Amino acid sequence: MSDTLDLEELAETLSEKLWLLQLNQLQKVCVEIKIQSETVATRRALIRLITESMDSVIDDEEQDVAAHHLRTLMKQVDQMIGNSENTDDEENTESTAQTSQKTAEEISLAEKYSQLQLSSQALQDEVRWLSERLNSASPSQASVTQNVMPTTVNRLPEVTIRRDFKICGQIGEKGQKEKLSYTNLMHQIDRGLMRGHSEAEVMEAVIKSISPGLSLRDMLEIKRDLTLPQLKAILKGHFKEDSSTGLYHRLVNITQDSRESPQNFLFRAIELKERLLLASSDVGSDEQYSAELIQKKFLRSLSTGLLSDHIKFQLKPYLDDLKLTDEILIDRMNEAASVESERQSKQRKNTSSKVTKVNEMQTEMQTSQQGQCAAEARVGVQEQSAEVLKPKNRKSPAVASSRLRPL
Image (cartoon, rainbow, N blue to C red; front, side, top):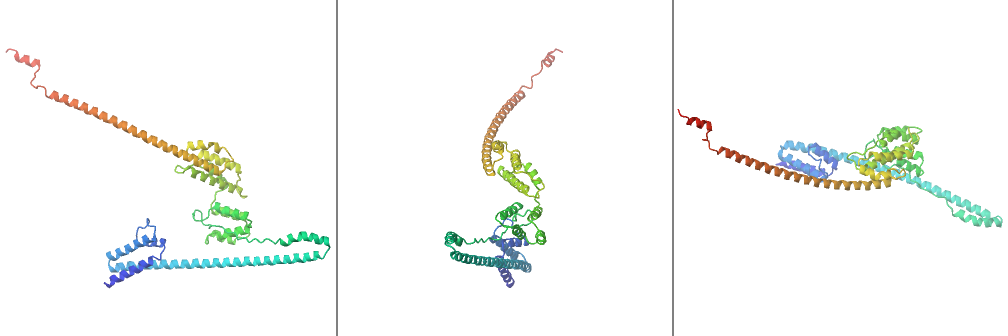
């Protein structure tokens, strides 16, 4: 009885510790004890499954086996809890470091601002000294000074506090959905340059945004005399981005997939076009294509790549216009796809009604044919019955005459 109580207490303690685990950790526990949990998406349901499994082990297995199972499971849970606490400590350490770095930046900005205020005060003192000297000069100069000095004194030097440039997101391996793409990264770099940040600031922000542990970051951190064009070329190789020639051929040969909607096909073509424009604008590109040529091939590929002839016919007046914007094209594509969907829906209804009528006619014809066959069969049976009922003693004339011949 005491052993049973020990098992119950151990199971109760283990159930309480399960609430300290995260969803992914509970899923790992289910895998360890061979519980199907692929369709379960909540912590409460997973804990209930694990608890039911423990109860079944206590009820069905021997006490030694059940105790060993529960202790093994307890060690795994304790190890997961310890790993979670270590992760939390690392996150707290990292957040503390970030906070201290932010505080240092704020102190640096405050010092710069105080220096600017001192410079402004020095300028005001110098202006005041010059105005006093001018007042002691000739009256004509004094009148000129009275007209000019107010604007000079009131005009203070502008102080602009600009934040450091940072890349939103993180650079990882190619294909990782939660990481930055090459197109998005190039867009952020160009935006930073447009806002007045220097190339050195932009390059430093890009290097900081690379995931720690990647050889790419280690290489860039020790590389000397790195320039922004060189950095872009290295990033292009890291993301395995196609060259301008490869993007051009992909745009020319793009076609709509059988399971792809017309709108998604258009979005995919626009993405290829924008990537080709970006690659062609790069100074180190292997081949540079003009924007007019890219737009012409883009519209041509849409016309030849769409599967529906009806949508092509509706878009044809717009696909011949090289000045057509992407927004108008998307709007016209939505209208054409809506009309095509409505047309196909009506055709399906008409086809189903025709098939129903044909089936009814075939059923009627089969029924009438079966009736005719049954009638013919009945007539044949009646004729055979009549043949059977004829008198069997009726003899041929030759036999009768031979019997009447005298001996």
